[in-house]
Image 1 (cartoon, one colour):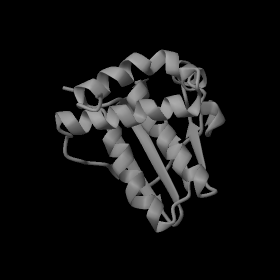
Image 2: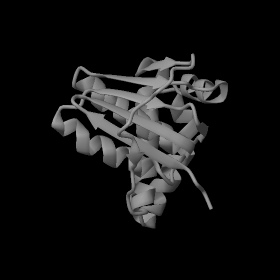
Image 3: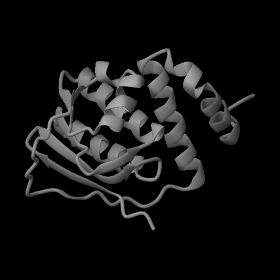
Image 4: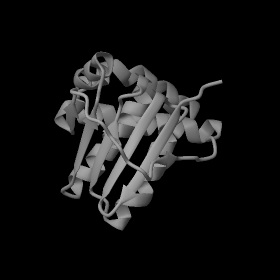
Length: 164
């Protein structure tokens, strides 16, 4: 069983997200649910701590890009902290370093209010929709990503019945 967790905290206008284990299509909706709940309340600064993150897939990265885009539109900022070499390479290869700041040096995050972001698992259709939105965002961030994800997007649209 996967023991990955998304830990979250929002205080004033600042939020912290800590990814423990894998950031994947299985928990990307937890990140999305959190930021959709706190941004309308005025939160415009996000720190995402990847110190304990062992893996990031494209759905999670696309969801992170959606967060970065939302925050940027509101004049806020997203800072990714403690990215290991592999996660840094993934974010740079997808052009996400143009959407938010990535800090690779070790920065200790001591937030007392961090708690597990529990959300019910998504059904197959909801998971497919989340994956589609995330991959479309990656293509929007950098047109070079179209060649990387066009087949994934086509498959997901077909699976969701969105192709004519």
